[in-house]
Image 1 (spheres, each protein chain N blue to C red):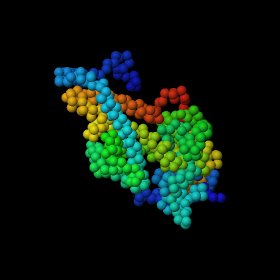
Image 2: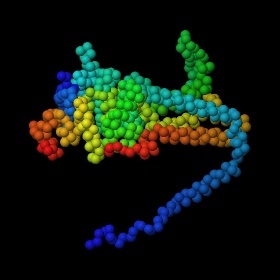
Image 3: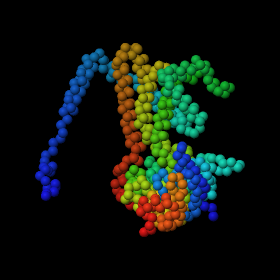
Image 4: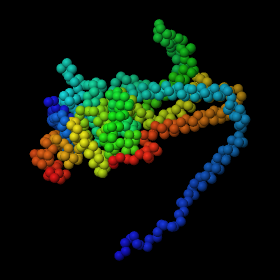
Length: 258
Length: 293
C-alpha cells in the first residue's frame, strides 16, 4: 500500500538555523498521526512542508504517492507550476493555529469559498454542503456571522469546516488549540475527535498530550529538528524508549497511563 | 476586628454628582468668536463686490468649467487607479522584467512635477510631429494631443505612479495567514489575489484613495496652463475681462468646497459599507444566539 505520507531524511533551514535535521517518517492511509514536542522542535515546519507552504532543502517527501512541490520531467526535478501546485494542495486540507479565516467573508462564505472558486461548484450546491458542514461542527445558525463576530473556538470550527469542504484525502492540524482560551479548547478537540473516527488520514501537531494519546493511532516525538521516537500512542506514553521523550512527558505529568 | 466592608469610609450612594468644570473650553470659545468676528468684519468692509460672486456663481461658463473639472477628476483618477493597480501588481510579481518596468515608471512619474508633465504631453508634437503605427494609422500629433487628452494623460499617468504605491501598501497589509489558508484550500495565485487579497485591499486603501481623489480635484486646476477649460481657467478668462479677480476666486472656492464636501461624505459611506465585516455587533445578529462556546 502506498503510504499517505512518506518523508525520508528531510532537511530544512531558515538561514543558519536548521529546523529539520533529517526527519524520516511515514503515515499510512486512514491513520491519525500525532506529532508532539517542545516549541521550536520543527513540528509545525514539517507540517507546512507537507502542502508546500515551506520548501524543503533536501530529502524526499511524498504525499499521496506524489513528490511534493516538484515532479520528474525527463529525468530532472521540475518545480510545479501554479496550477499543478494548487491541484496538489486541493487534496490536503489544513487547519492553522491562528484560524486564518477570510475576514471579509461570513462563516458560510469561508466554507464555500474553496468549492465555489476552486472546484467551480454552483453557489446553491456549495451552500447546501457548507451549511451541512457547519451544522456538523456545531455552528448551525451562525452561517452569516463574520469571523470577528465569532469566538476563537467557533472560528477554529469554521476553519475545520472550510478544510473539510474540499473533501481532502489528508487533513493537517497545526496546533489547532494553541491560540484558544482554555475554556474553548474542548469544543475544538471534540470536533477533531469526531473527524478522527471517519477514517480520514490526519496529521495533528498538538500540545494537548492527553488528547493526542486518546485520538491518535501513532505519535511521533520531535525535538530540535529531529524525530526522537515514533510509536503507537499508548506505547509512547507508557513505555517511552528515549530519555528525551521521558523528560518531555514527565514535565507534563502524563508519562503514566491514567 | 471589623472587616473593611464595615469601616466608616463615606459612601458614594445618594450623594449628588457634579460634573468636572472645563474653563479652558470657555476661554477658547471666546477667543475663537473674537477672531472670527474680526475676520468677518475685515471681509465685510473689504473691497469685495459680493453681488458679483452671487451673479457668477450660477453663470453658465463657470458651470461648464466646473463640469469639466469634475469630468477630468473622474477620468484622470480612473486612469490613475487602473495604471496604479497594474503597476502595483507588477511591482509585487516575481517576474523581474515586470518588476523593473513598474519601478521605472514609478520612479519617473513621481520624480518630476505634474506641471512639467502636463507641458511635456501638450508639447509632444515638438518631439514627434506624427504619431501612430507606421503604415497603418498615422495622425498629426497637434491634432491628436488636444488640451483634454494632454491633461488626462498628464494627470492620470502621474496619479498612477502615486496610486501604485498606495495599492501596493494595501496589498502588503493583507494578513499573510489568510493567503496561506487560501493556498491550502487549493486556490491558484490569481484566485487568491482576486477573491482574498483585493477585496480586503479595497477596504484598506479607501481612506488614502479618497485623499488622492480630493487632491486630484484640485490638481485639475493645473491643466489651465495647457488651456483645458476647467473652472480656474474659465474664471481667469472672466477676470481678465472684468477685473473682478477676488470675486471669481471666491466663486471657484465655493465650487471646490462644495465638491470636496460631497466627496468626503461619499468616502464615509463607502468606508462604512466596506467595513461591515469588521463590525463586531451587526444589528441583525441580535436575534440569533451563539451555539456551543
